[in-house]
Length: 444
Ligand code: 5AD
Ligand code: SF4
Image 1: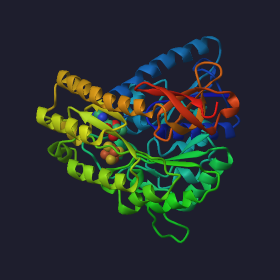
Image 2: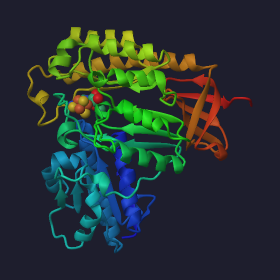
Image 3: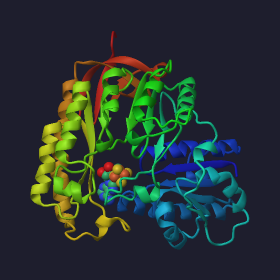
Image 4: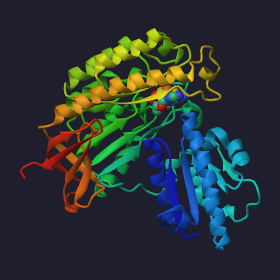
C-alpha cells in the first residue's frame, strides 16, 4: 500500500480523529491520495448521530465498492476501512450491508490500525471488526499530534454520561474520559510550535473535563484553560461542545479573566420547553439555561452564543415548540444548528409515544430556521463597519482570496495574498450575508 484517502463524515471530533489517523498512516510510509480512485487504502470516518448521516455512509460505501471493482479490473487492489461511530453502533450491519469492507474500527480503537493493516493480508471473507471499549487510552498509542495550520483541534475529553434520551453518543463514544492536564498542555505546545495560533479544545461534553494533573489531582476545564493561557504564541482558545448544567462559576470567570478565550460559545439547549427538556433527560430547564447565559454575559458582555435545537421530539406540542421560539427570541443566538428529531434504535426516545409526524417536523424546522437565520443575519449586518482580528486559515475559491474566522466564528472572505495565510490580521468588515462576511485589511 502506498496511498491513502480518508473521507470524514460528521463532527469536529471526527475531523480531529481523521487528522490523527492520517499521521498513523504517514508513519507507516503512506502518502495522501487526491481521490479514492488513486488510493490503495480508503478509510471512511463515520457519523451515527442522525439516520441520514448513517445512511449516507452506506450509500457512499456502495459507490466506493464500484471504484474498488474498477481498480481491480486494472489489476489494482484497494483496502477499504470504516472507522468511527457507525462502526460502534452497527458493526453487524456493516458486515451484512457492506461485506466488501476489509476492516472496521470504533472511535476508541483506531490506534490499533497498524496491527489491523498487518492482519488484513491474511483476511478471508468477513470484515475484521474491533468495537471494543478498550481499557487503554488510544491517546497513549498515537503518534504525536501535528498542527492543522493556523487553527487546530485538540481533543481533551471524550464520551458522555448524560444519556439524553434521543442521543447515540454515550453508546458510540462510551462514558466520559478526560486526558491528563500535562498531556493536553504538551500537545497544545506542539501545535503552537507547528504554527497554530488558535486551538479549539474538543469533547462531547467538554466542560465536564476532569483530567488529572501531574500530582494525580482532578482538575476542571477552568484550570486547564488557565494553563493554556500561559502558552506564548497561542493567541486564541475555544472549547466545544459544552453542556449547560456543567457550566460552573470557575468556567464563567474564565470568560472575564482570559483574554485569549474567544467571545463565542456553543451551548446547545435543544428545546425551550421544560416538559420536553425533562423527556429528553436534560439536567436543566429553560429558565436555568437563561440564567447561565445571563451569568456568562455578566462575565463578558461581548459574548455571542450559538446552540443546537431538535424539533419534533416525541410529545412536542405546538405550545412546546412556541417555547423554543420564545427562548430564541430571548437569547438572540448569533449562529445555530437545528435538526428534525431522528429516531435512533437503542435510545429511549425511539420507543416513546407521541412520535411527531414528518410533515409537522418539517414545518417546525422551517419556522425555527427562519427565526434563527434572521438573528444571524442581523448580527452579521451589525458587524459591517467594525474592525475585527481575523485568523486566515483557508484558501478562498478565487486566486488572491483567503477565508478566515472572526472571533465570533463568522466566515470572512478577503482579497489577500498567501503570505497572510495562517496569520491574524485586522480587517474592516465591508459586507455581510447570513453566512459570511467580506472585508479589507485595515489600513489599506
Ligand atoms: N435527532 C436529531 N438531532 C440529534 N442530535 C443528537 N441526536 C439527535 C437525534 N436523535 C443533535 C443534538 C446535538 C447535535 C450534535 O445533534 O442537537 O446537540
Ligand atoms: Fe448526546 Fe450531548 Fe446529550 Fe451527551 S450531552 S447524550 S453527547 S446530546
